[in-house]
Length: 343
Image 1: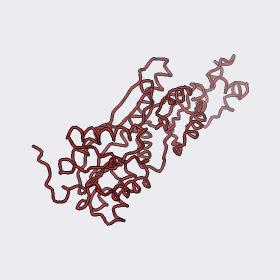
Image 2: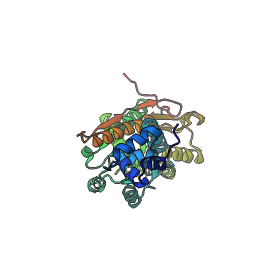
Image 3: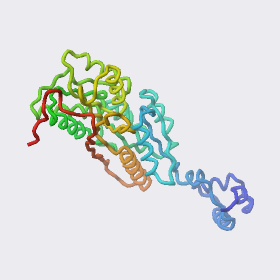
Image 4: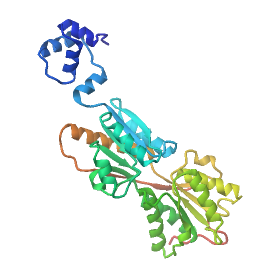
């Protein structure tokens, strides 16, 4: 590896370091040929920063998430980083689920990164102008905004996941089925609730509104929501939890109340826990490939960055990641009732 520096190149040509730097930045300088020859003769290798300055690229992308402590977002970042390859550095930034902080972060990232993978906090009609004003290539992951047709996105099949969970419980004979969703103004909260309610309707099971609990995707929210369901005069016989953190909180509430799984209540989690078999019985769950979702988001972002650099049009791309049900021991027919016939 060459040990030559930019100073060595400048001294060989007889110009200032600033002149060599200007050449490396893409500017026209009178001594261009001499600088090129010196770089070749000295086998000078410009730093990554210099190369990026010349191309107008930073070789850095950012992933902005609302809750860095959530294992889902950590897995998204891991998958994205693996797909970025050796030529890109990946920054993981936590917005803390605060809109003002998210806006400040995007403003600070402008000019410092080539693009952003974002799980946005704002999905209503204010979202479009908010995101569009930065001019950064943005790929939404796990969320979409009101102008989704203008941005690339990578979503999981939330409706299918909730449908598979609800169908599984109905097949076991449950009709008093509750769901603990995330905020209904978010894409996953809304679509998982939709999958649940539409399946009940199709199976001609009346929706009990008190069984649809809107929570906040946190452990504490899952705990409080499960306690509320258990205190209902007619508690549900089965519960679907809307994400991994709420599953943990709900399981804590069941343990505290000495409610047996699956003898007293059945439970299905949306998102597989990191160590599901360490729980007794193992948690039946809707599995989605977190790492692949992050990798798909990175591939979409790199394609968008490349298209922007080449000044070519690329229509927004929308990707859907599939899900499936993993059966373990946390579900059984309700007390005194046989499972429904699948015929």
